Amino acid sequence: MDVYLPIANLAVNGVVIILLGAATGILSGVFGVGGGFLTTPLLIFYGVPPTVAAASAATQVTGASVSGVLAHSRRQGVDYQLGAVSVAGGVIGAAIGALLFRLLESVGQIDTVISILYVVLLGGIGGLMGREAIQELRQSKGGKRPRAAKRRHHPLVASLPMRWRFYRSGLYISPLAPLLLGAVVGMLTMLMGVGGGFILVPAMLYILGMSANVVVGTSLFNVLFVTMASTMMHSLTTKAVDIVLAGLLLIGSVTGAQIGTRVAQMLNPEKLRLLLAAIVLAVALRMAFGLGVRPDEVYTVVPL
Image (cartoon, rainbow, N blue to C red; front, side, top):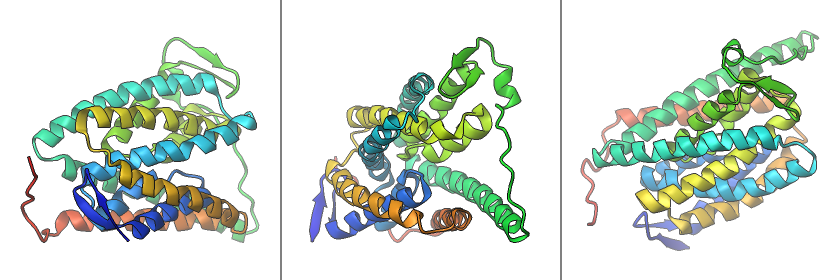
């Protein structure tokens, strides 16, 4: 079933795109992370232009985040105060990211920058996750259960001025910390089409020192509104959002997330994290390989 993508100016197999969305949805349900950081590179591998892939993936993440926020909200798992501060930073970051996107697009370097950012981020995060998962597996094999250390915020966070109390997270920190963190995620969302959850969750845990029971819900709250803002900015500035592509991805990801949630309950969490690290590193290596190989078509003709 061929489907024409009007913005990408490309005919694709609709079933393949739905299955791709389902695959990222399963990963989201199994590992507890948004699939946006894998959706964009997989679309690029399939032949979708990186600019359209990044913009459309952000649209898909927006739709997929709604149900997650509602579910965590019912369990009192969202810190709305801290989430609102990080969203404000995210909107500012998305605006800066939109300017960078247009600048890089005008000089013809946006595709290369998107690929390099993915290689660096996925390689770093995959390596850290893999190392942590291997350490925990070794401890569990030796009969030692890893002790849960009390989380404290990073010393740099403690040095920032003007403190607020975030009751739901149990934090007394400067609002500048979540604001700056949100700004970084907003920039990455605009440039790469990611939800930012795969960066935001570890940053909230290890930098802000948030309570684990509100991290995922607060992260999804941020992702929902920042990707919404990024989608609007892409639509108004880059005009790279392909709503047909985003719709097909969303159909697959919603179904896949339900399957992934059930699969996750049957698997060992340490082995799951090791598997996710392997998948992330494999995607990073494939993108790095693509950067160093001469393309089949050196020149691309863009219709005026």
